Image 1: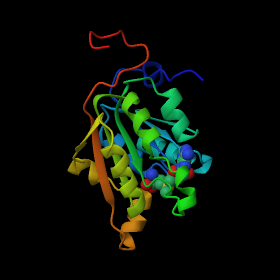
Image 2: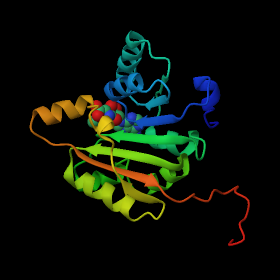
Image 3: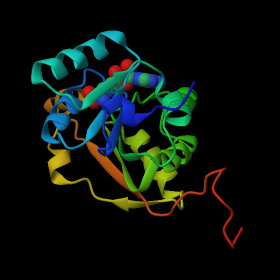
Image 4: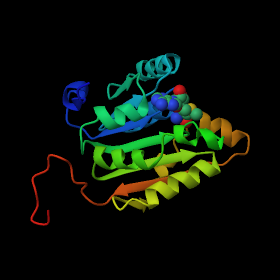
Length: 197
Ligand SMILES: C[S@@+](CC[C@H](N)C(=O)[O-])C[C@H]1O[C@@H](n2cnc3c(N)ncnc32)[C@H](O)[C@@H]1O
């Protein structure tokens, strides 16, 4: 499958932000309304949830929001043009709590590598989860990468609560949050050689 052409999808050159596992689109619909100067793409595998996102976008008259029904890690690895994203949002990805299922988790060292390629220099990955062991894994894999440095989640972004987050917080389960900024330009296969290489 060809990589996405954001210029033709969004009809412009605004910064593009991607959410993987966007669920009912509660985050994207709110955040895209706050930022009409940015373009947003949601990836979700469940059709019913994507339809809800579409209805939210229609009701709010959003023109800067699109969605895609595909597998999240496939999209990140194969469909996002290198160095094209301003931000990558992953909120409450399925935690796969049983240890034998941890290999199914979205956030792992492969994900970090593909995120570093997909983001522009200075682009940021924003993560949230309710699951402490998964959060530890997120911190570990991003901490091991020389491409990323810890950064802050802006208060304006943290204030936009997702559907799952609202339910977890209402049951007394706090949000664990982390953010990582691409701090080095990741070398791509077709980059011209540098004097160091
Ligand atoms: C726990 S829900 C969180 C939804 C939303 N981010 C929120 O915070 O309200 C996880 C979402 O990720 C979707 N999902 C899980 N694995 C996925 C995958 N491999 N590709 C695309 N979507 C996926 C699920 O269908 C579900 O909607």
